[in-house]
Length: 383
Image 1: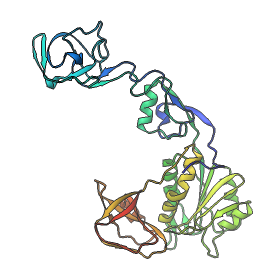
Image 2: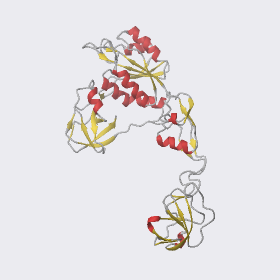
Image 3: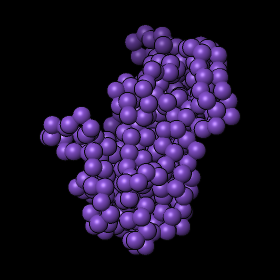
Image 4: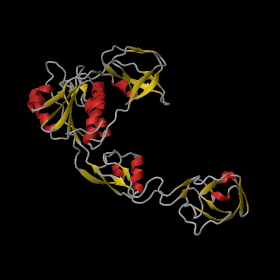
């Protein structure tokens, strides 16, 4: 999914290299020199002229990584060479030590000519000025390695989007409270905060909004001062679901208010006062699923990513599986460590966070299909 109009990233800022991990690059990164800057060996062995193979060679010296062999290899000469060392002038092949026999200052091999074998040529990885990393990519450990390789001690990245999280509902109480049997602790705001941080945002948990239009409007006004606002609960069609009305009073433009998935059908997406918002359903698993399916992509775009992905894969079912067609369902499941087999987990619906905690993927049940047999392939989505 490419960035869409209106999802402008925050301004860039400079951070130190290690602090750039997980952040989104705000500038292209180019090679400051050829990589490798000189031809180098990728094996321990002997650097030779391929035209002299096979045969016996005089060992003229050695070269290790971090040093250079002065001079050029002559006819029937070999230089003992270590992995990563620069290839001596005149040599165009490295013979692995395992393919040689040595007697004092002499080396013999039956290897045939293969110019370039076990040598990384100068610039084979990148040429000076080549673009190594694109603006808009999220930096993982390999990206950090590239930055370190080209000497970037300070990195230009986009500022993390500030994300307001507003839990709603009279039944929601603080974590420290002892809930009555008709109340629940405020788990949604905290699970969302983790999902937001994982997607590159800076979560800000606001107070719980009671099922009161005035209180909800006041908190929405606070939330709209952020780069993105997430509300949990209050978006169904119930008598006390006041979120949509409060958003409308804040001047909201609604893009959709329902999706054909389960869990998570009641889902509101729109924009008010220049800030995008999602009204997520209130059941915990519904909140988690709809964030991953919809809000995560919006947040990644706001964080500066040029593209976002939906990393579906496929696995074989370990047992028969059936569901009621009509909706695409994202259900808790366990993918085996080798990643080839998936087992649906027993769960009691969209409030069952225990089953969700035991899962490591969502089983994606197609809306147009009713049942699958054990051994059939089915789509899964990483959790």
